[in-house]
Image (cartoon, rainbow, N blue to C red; front, side, top):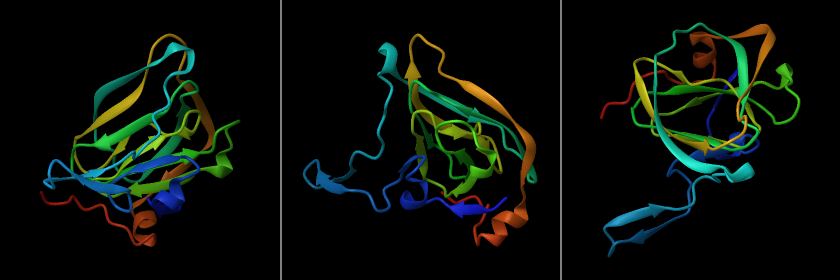
Length: 174
């Protein structure tokens, strides 16, 4: 499966990239802090939802990896902000009726988070290299907010796909 570098422009149809790179920013706290402002549109209010902050601890997935199931959250957005310095994979498809031919894969660099827009199809967390923690901001409240679909034919992501995109699975040193 072709993998793209995660950029604001490439990911815009699916949500927001949460990263200081290219973000609006300004100095605060008497010049001791740089604020990277309004990085994601958190959309959780439908049906009296409320914002919820969790930590997801993702088991590392091995490549080649088969994409067989996708999910979406029809009542709210879902943001993933990595706490580790590992890259991770993102697989998405546009809102609406699921279309397997519209699948896109991205490799998130260490430090890049994503916010999936309400209703965007995405794969569950695909951590790489080692156990990885993520702060997740999503919707809490009444109503069914997770739908899943099975792919008729699995899509495979391999190390060769990563290399073909000129990307790296290396862990960033702290």
